[in-house]
Each structure stands twice: as C-alpha cells, then as structure tokens.
Image 1 (spheres, rainbow, N blue to C red):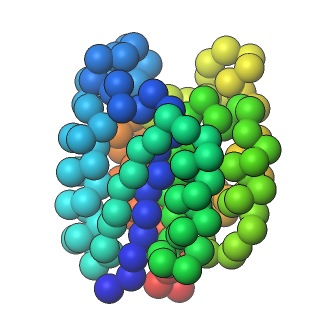
Image 2 (cartoon, helix red, strand yellow):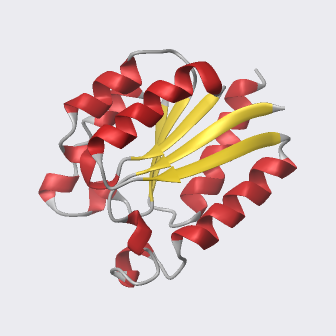
Image 3 (cartoon, rainbow, N blue to C red):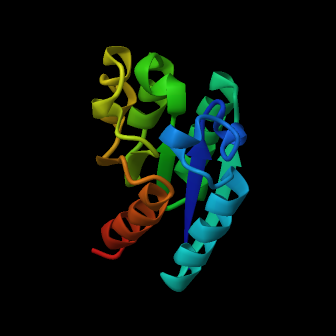
Length: 145
C-alpha cells in the first residue's frame, strides 16, 4: 500500500469556525476523515498533519521524502510568502499537489500569487473540502502511472 501525507498550514485548525462563507462549514477533523476514507478506497495509506509553524511544515516536508510516496499540501497563508517551503518542496521528486479550499485567484490581490506552487506537480483550488478528495484522486493516478 502506497503512503501519502497531507500537510495543512496555519489557521486550518480553525476550520468550521473561521470565515465559513470562504472556507466552508466542515472542520479539519471532518475533512481528515473524508480524506482518509477516500484514500483507503484507493488503497492508499494516508497520514494528515497540521501546523501553524513554518519550520514544522518544512520538517514534515523533509520527512516525506524518505517516508511517503506522495504529498498533498495546503500551505494556507504561507502559500503567498514562503520561499522556504518552496525550497523544501523542490528538494525532492515525489509527486506533490498543492490544494486550497477557496479559489485563491478569485480573492484579494495578495492571495492570487502562489509562491509554493512552483514546487509541486499541480494545484487544485476552489472546491472546498472536495479539493482534498480531488487531490487524493489525482495523486493516486500519478502514483499508479
């Protein structure tokens, strides 16, 4: 069974309470359960992490290189600011997908630029919690080519 990791960035632990009109009603725990169910149906072993710390996210990315077959990341606000996360993503070649609950290209100007997306195979955004499901399906396809 292939192993994949989802890394969630800052403030995603507030999902379900935070700006529901933008991020939806589901909590991160609910999204995690939906994601694990989809991964299992695709014969993938999924681990999920969340951190509000840029350095912890970078350490998780480093860990992924030797311990996982694929990576999904929602860098949240670090999407627009973190060259360090971009460099970590670029440091190895497992399949990687960036996701966002909201459509970052339909938001404030400062959110329309994704620095981190230059380090991934593709980006999925704007589908709420389904962005996670779609990323798992895409990663499964990449891993089974």
